[in-house]
Image (cartoon, rainbow, N blue to C red):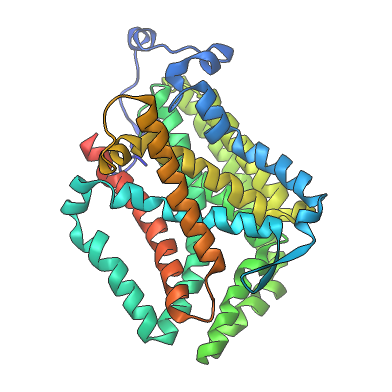
Length: 375
């Protein structure tokens, strides 16, 4: 979500901050920082409900749902048998994936700058999947693991925004934050109870007779103990170094953001408890629910003016914002419903959902990189 230029660490020779400079830019700390509206991306109430609170709220939701018939009793939905909780989660996930198009194609200025990426790439991706079986299976498996990377990157983006809101240099500690978030999200998957749920996607290559990839799930299962211990050891050492680096930063002018700390701690704890142990059997519901909710909150907060303009609703007026919100939610959830109801035996339908997934992962990071230049 911030510039992609090389990181400039304070501990690696950047000019030190004088006492006068520190005093002139001093920001409130502790409880005062939590109450300071300037330290939030949108505002305290909005951020706590849609950015900071969702990981914890999702864990509570997962526990509640696991104790209800919605998680266990299946219903018929357009010829598919699935639980109500799985159905609603599926709609919500697909809806948030589709929401990226309000950020990419909804902004005419950005769209015109990169017509190939925004107009040609989806067509080529769809055509490739329609014409080649190996390509389609490869994209399906890629989507599973790109999702893991993308989810960690989203939390990283929020963390960097809170750092900037605290008055810090956006390049300080950037690489450390990136790898911390990837560790917190992907680590519990590789070393935990849901590892096979992710890697068994390689079995899709059976349909195209690529025997080598069929061995991946069995290899990961047999060697998971080594991966688990490696993650624990390397991850533990990294966390120690991360805390040490943060201490070094604070000695040279870095301001700790309580919002960022809360987000990282709760997201990391949620990931370890849920991905690592598949708590209550609701790992996918919990992790995907909070990720999608955060994304909806981000898109509405940052892209609402663009959406209003696109719908001819730009300008002041609560009714314009309300109508724009209704259209935004209706279109995204409408796509989510269609994606869940679509016949999985129809190749074109599967290809469309994969195009939306891949474009979501790609566009989300790319649009931020472009928009920073505009902002």
